[in-house]
Image (cartoon, rainbow, N blue to C red; front, side):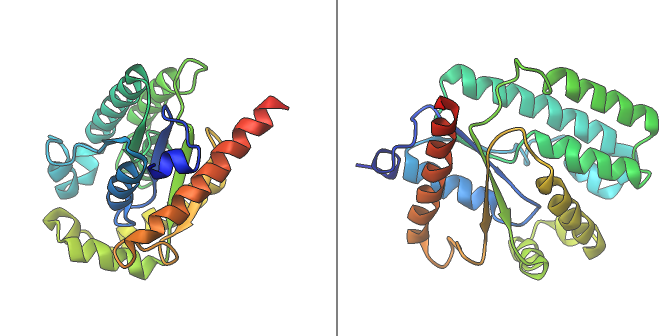
Length: 223
């Protein structure tokens, strides 16, 4: 019996992992999918035609990058639900508009016209009763210093050359964003309490918490 069966997690569930860059989304996605016998859905970082250009010139490429991410995540969300669920997803579509596009507009990297075009497109695609929202969003959080250390350790050149002030601003914006997020149930996990690098067995504690939130949500809907 796998952990999904042990704790009664629906086989068709879709769980999305959210959090700032370097917080450990990809690691949790892999470990959780394995524990639940689910499929994975990852960001297409290596094949993204705009990402490296964006890190070289935020102002020139921020709109292009956000439109690309929006289209790719929308297609992936639709694919997972058409497949019948049973996925763990690395990063949500909601972070694009709630954090990244908003940040680049407010910092002057995206024009008012481009930002309006982007947000209108996002609302038309996502903020409707017909869009298939995930069953649960897991939000990973932890100390800023720990997250920056992880970014440096993984050694992506385009991230290593990014000023630490950029990561600090993103970190603060994530904290503000998650406090107002309500598109689906949320489970918050501190990476210091559930460090899958140090203790892989802690995945079971995470699965227990997932089951508690999902089962509690189902029960509340029955009342």
